[in-house]
Image: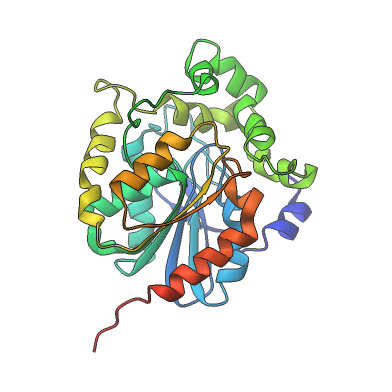
Length: 300
């Protein structure tokens, strides 16, 4: 990856936490109320750069790269089991390392939603606010189907397409923005961490770990997270949603409206899955307004 280009677009100090099974890369910018950013697949903390550049002036912004993603280590299957459970444990380990126990605002995108919400449901005292973007905290909603692109990645050709040709990361850079094409520089930084067969292991394992039926290993934790969403009824929630997302589509949005009618919803008809790439300034404005409207409670 071009380090000069990275520094230009991602002007943050890299930090690392040794988890034993690999070094977890994260950034910890600014001071104030903590915001914790959790990405999904195949992005990395780079996705949140626009929000963090602005919000670090008033908040402490922590964003991790999951093991196998972004600037974190990318161990093989013999060194790490790429499961939802381990993703949640890694997030919890980072929070413990940083002393982040409560008053957190989670900013969640894609499968980062399931990871962050699983940690939240396990200990609801952690969270004070939730920002959700094209994500899920539940199993496939009624009528929901796995898109053909993900089916292809999970099938016999997935290893060759995803690990051999970087089809998942490169494809996302092309198809997950819909208002205007991603610039070559930004595209190179989204895909840069996945430059070889070995480096692409997590983008494939993430897809393979999506729970579709009770026998899948992530099913029990995803179901427990889904069942625990009711414990978060009183947590203020902001939902910002790109309506041209072919993965987290209208059925997922409808399920959020059904499960969390108390949330504040903002939808973007022309935005895709990478809603922050298509509508970054608008999402930032909504996030800042939401944080101001729901100040953290302080002791008397």
